Every structure is written in C-alpha cells, then in structure tokens.
Image (cartoon, rainbow, N blue to C red; front, top):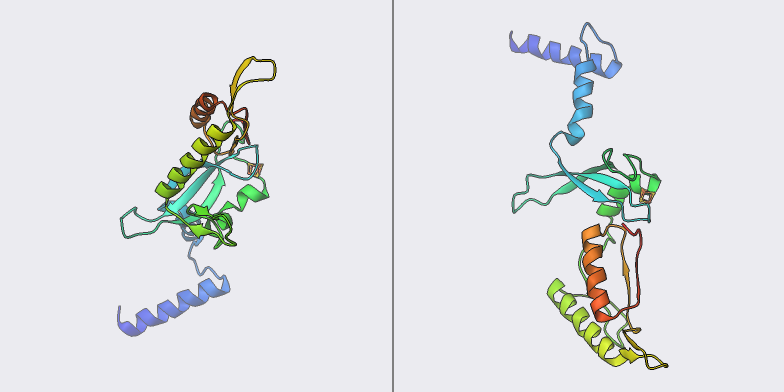
Length: 194
Ligand code: SF4
C-alpha cells in the first residue's frame, strides 16, 4: 500500500466513525474495549463510605503503578457487591465519593488551632499524637472522679468524651473501647457501631 492510498483509507475510516456509517466495519468490539479501559489498569481498594451510619462498602479504583515518584489518581468509585451491608448499592452521596476525594478543601493532614489564635495550622502526625496524649493526660488528671457522692468507687473521667467514625473497623472499635475503659471515660460511641 502506497502513502496516498493509506491516507485515503484513513480519511474514509474517519468519515465512517464521525458519521456513524459502518462501511462493513463492526465497531461493537472497539466500543466495548473503550468501556472496559476506564478501570482496566486500576488498583482496587475496598473501603467504607464515610458519610453516614449505614456504612456502605465501596471499591476505589486508583490509577498509578505505585512507584515512589508516581501519585496515584482515583478514577472511579463504585459500590462493593460483596459487602454484607449494602451489597453493591450506594446512595447519591456515596456514588459521588470521587468528587470528595479530589476536592481541593479535603483535609489530608492534622491541623491545630492554638489558644488565642484565629487560624488553623498544619502539624505532623507525630506532633498531633503527642499533643492529644498530653491533653488526655492533663484532662484525666484534672477531672478524674474516684468515688461518687455516696462514697462508692466509680473511677471515671467525665472530662473526656469520644466519638468514632463509621469507617472504623470492629477491631479498631474493640481496641478503643478497651483503652477508653482503662481511662475511665464514660461518654463514648461510634457513628455506625460497626
Ligand atoms: S452510600 Fe449513602 S447510605 Fe451508604 S453510607 Fe454512604 S451516605 Fe450512607
């Protein structure tokens, strides 16, 4: 095939695609391949929708080969058909999770608002954990109640309350329940009780 013939065929093919004419070509396979490509090379990560107490299961599709210099990009989020609670279904909020993940205002690191300040500042995870531990210790020491008004031993810390999120696992909730019990914290709950 010479160059002129090749170009003519190319123009004919482009016209056929643009005009919807088939000219004997079966475009079904090509269209099916295009639909498959969106998640063909993605990594699947199972997670939980963070919005409400139903705790629907989601599969997050991420593009990227996990190399150190490559930032993964979430290209699709869908319901997890194997999830025992939601069995693949999502409400509109869960179905729009991809927008939440990519939103410019999404918090991706801890922040602190110091006493007397009017703004939040970024801190490291190590500083955040150390700061929380210090506040827990100070508050427990300050508010601990060993005995109630009747003289009965209660060993409680009413100065602290704890709330977990719906994406917390049973294992995490078991550990946080044990830890909070050892501190004497009476006010505690998790959003979904999963
Ligand atoms: S998908 Fe909807 S119903 Fe399910 S956890 Fe998310 S917000 Fe709740």
